Image (cartoon, rainbow, N blue to C red; front, side, top):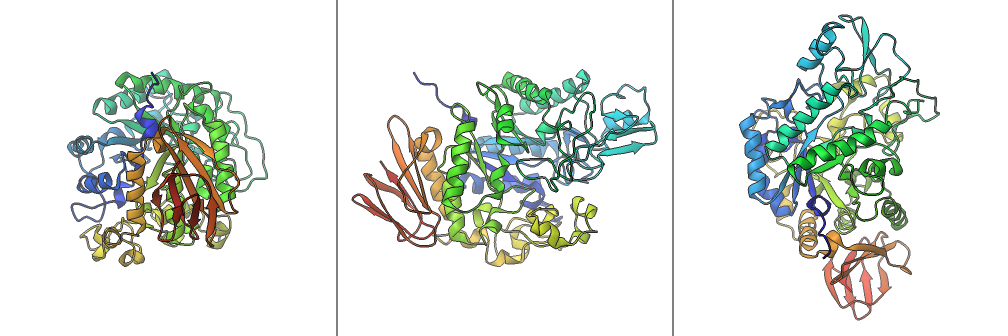
Length: 535
């Protein structure tokens, strides 16, 4: 009997940034109770798993990615009782709860670091990475990643920002403490973890200098930049072994999802999932597609390469927006027709779809000045003109993609009753919001609902094989999803003009827009149209 696929390979993931999702108490900041209030919305959208960015105790210098206590909740988000209620309410609705976990570093306000920096001979002196003399390593945000602590007269290493010191995973006490945190949350009912900057956790034991490169800026598939190749500060052999060790810890609690944030070439991303079998991370993000090109040729090449690197039993993840990069519709010129087609691909290709909050209604970026940013990163770059970063397609001010969720056309888009929200609401909220799209059967929101329903009702879209259709017109991309008992044909027209396609099928399962039609052995696709046919 054929073994069924594990849940984490057939699921769909909805990503919430809690500060911006729903404010339940009128302080202008989204919170855990706000998420609970909107769980029915997420369930009715059709998503099976929810990933929330961190709400652990934190000084919020990097808005939760600087953790001061991994087993406490930051008061602006709620309490431990709220967190446990969230897990319970998610489960009541038949969904899974995924927490964001930062294994690489803590806040400099964490009790562990305060003790570690206090002297060279305390009980946690070796819990972080300390050096008498720094090497040449740059941080992921640019500039020297070493920072002097006068208490010890030594430098500590931060892969990201200065107030986020990296833990020393070569110390077995650190590994035990972090694994205990994983067990703590799994014991509370969490179903899995998104793992922040996972491939940076181990660094070269000899602290060798990174080599020079002419590459100016990091890219989604290569962390090297600022004229330095990240050879010794990322992707170390021990990190691949850690993925397997972590998998074993998680499996003490049954089938558990682990999805890694890994900025690397696709062959490296695959290594974190496993070599011959999927015995490392259950899933890993592939960030090259965050800078997708809206053409049939691009997606054919992308999916072909992903299928080569992630054949069954491995499963890829398809993600087009996240909390650090420009929203997908920005790359589409805010064209809702293109957005529908993009998500039709995302929800029918072989892989786990992951959607960032607001993406389902076409929320776009809000242009904000660097000098007033709450995000700490742009303050490092106020010396440079904004257009330079725009030309490089680099998202420096992450505030621009984290604005409050647009629920309706009332004040602050229904996000909050406060006089002022933590970030401004996008001024387009009157036109782009959940309430108005609910009423439009042809909206992006209802398109995604329909596609999610189709995905749930047709096993071929979750576990079926994928094969490309050949001989299609220019700008038409097509593939089959097939199980032993079901075959679906997916046709996507990335061009602006209508196209005719001749192939054999029995009936139409779904059409993206009015005018997308199939009859006999002929199918007609509108510009940016799509069809799903039964083979």
